Image 1 (tube, rainbow, N blue to C red):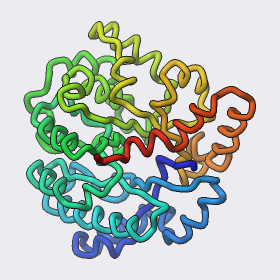
Image 2 (image 1 turned 90 degrees about the vertical axis):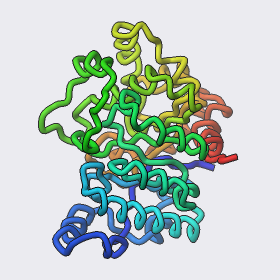
Image 3 (image 1 turned 180 degrees about the vertical axis):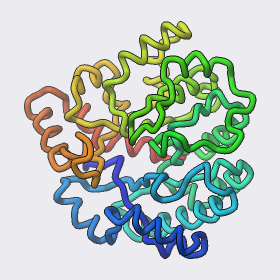
Image 4 (image 1 turned 60 degrees about the vertical axis):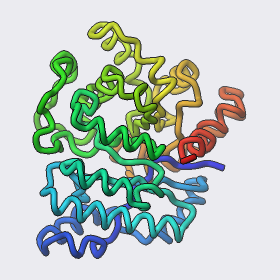
Length: 325
């Protein structure tokens, strides 16, 4: 079995008919036109991608699932989205989904966590751009996610998408890391390194150990890890590797430079196979999405990886994370 732990699908505009004005609905339709496809069409592509199951994610900036949105509308959209994806995946077992919480309203987010739609999800989709560990008021939410035994799925969702008042009582350590990974003005998709501050914040805050959190970092690969380790050792005298090996999992691009070297060092029990379908040629992951399985299979046949490592990255780690017991 091969499970694709990062694919992208947008629900049709009708899902949000009670949440969006006509102009916002038109904007949603325009932003997501490339991703609108019946789930049956997605199902038919599984054999082309050579995978058996996919995890369906969204890109918050185009869907409107954003922390900067009006809280009332965000709660309605989160409720509608989670319900729609839960129903879709109940009817189509080839797919799982990540649920979204409107973290601009913590009380509503906690209520949504108690809803079976969030509980049935593979993980809770959280924007990677907010240094959650350095923002104490959100720790109670992460505690509740851990109580539900749900992974946190850190995913790109807009470099400038922050809940109102997110920086109140901000841990002073934030400044040290922001000087290393500053927010870039007018940064395009993936062009700002502030998600590394988020990783540091989770490690330094102590919430990983306190709540035994399971963190999945999506779409960032592995090549950044050596530099980040050096930075954390320099700034905080902290080695992140023990934390990575206990609390983190990473979706990977097989074609990534130094993939084998870093994977062997980190451990294949930390990896989740992903195609990035259907990004197209906008990045290296999308450009190679039809070749990923073949490349991984060739690594196995050439004895670059063991059968155990192959099984871990293709399905065992995913199944372990999806175990809610």
